Image 1 (tube, rainbow, N blue to C red):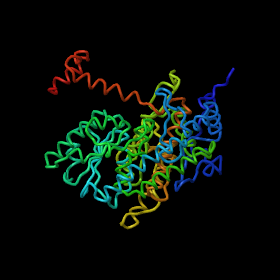
Image 2 (cartoon, rainbow, N blue to C red):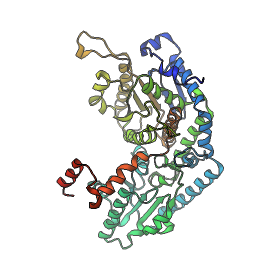
Image 3 (cartoon, one colour):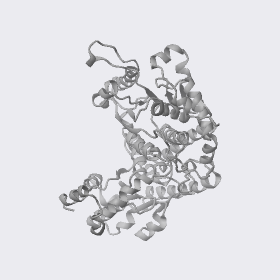
Image 4 (cartoon, one colour):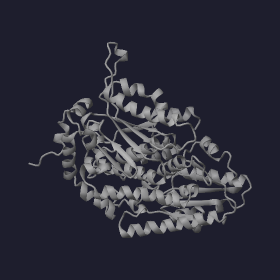
Length: 499
């Protein structure tokens, strides 16, 4: 009879965090790791030596090494759609064939960036980047994080179909000197094409004679973009096997290269490639994404946590929690395993978060004294780059470190309202500095962590069928012929809204 690899994990009784430190003077050394300009600390989680061994055994039972190799060699890892997942090839870390295809896409993208810089499109001052989900979140995060000292072009990222979002995005842009970069994998996404139509109308209404001539399409379906009316010379293709939430590294990063310059984009790729090499060739606890997955599963499977909070103690990383929400929940928010059978256990927790120290005065009350346990991840940067007195940065970092200590130790009191139970887990990621290379490394770490979690749970992180049902129903609900099939509550809302 085959032993259940989950048995040792499910049967584990975790000790208090303070007890784990008291029992093992080497705990910090064994539960931390430095890599790629980053320092990871899992010592304040309930992960211990027995659990690490149990998770390593689980990884072996789940065929982790073979599945990891399949990811890097371009084999089929997205079983439900019969595809490879080739985002690592965009960093030169995939199979030779996929690396070559990615390099060709980058060359085409760079040629277009060079043409814009050489004023082949005339004077360009702004870029309206239109996409949704991974087509927007990655570029928005990178440009916002690395462009605080100014970017070469004023890039606005538009995703929401709300008309107010469109007006906010184009406010202050000069239509005569603005390019539109539209990103859609299939070139059929309703929200993206609706916003593209609005952008074309905006250009035409402001006297731009050839509005289509201002549009650059980034897509895995170039024929659809041509049919839409965009010239093939202004289409940047990327592979069908590059998932949207993993696509920043492909031609989807066009606006990043424009805003920050090609050298910065290359450094972003190289930082990610460094983590690719680490993830592919490091084993067990020496593998940072895999160790992070062990800590994640300790929270969900051993402690029963339903959510995970990420707090960036750096204003430049304020969009990181939003980026991770899609990466983690769209990838691993599944109830069915890769083979189609129910998983039978908790999968991805709800990812949420914010920016420190703002969050301390908003949600940390619940984290310290609420009835549920929420694992917290603190992300901070050592090097200060703003022009303010160093008191700001010093207090920022001290607050981050103090919160982790307080969550762990708590404080006893005879007054229940002033008692803190402690024993609340947290992890920390400390970056040496925030530059393109380190940010690329950080985002690749999160990608591989997500993949590691999926393999250990036996699920497919590369499909997202749950996204489709709402879209299909939105189309059906707009058709009077099918609207009557909906429930009375939904029909009443439509009627009350005058739709």
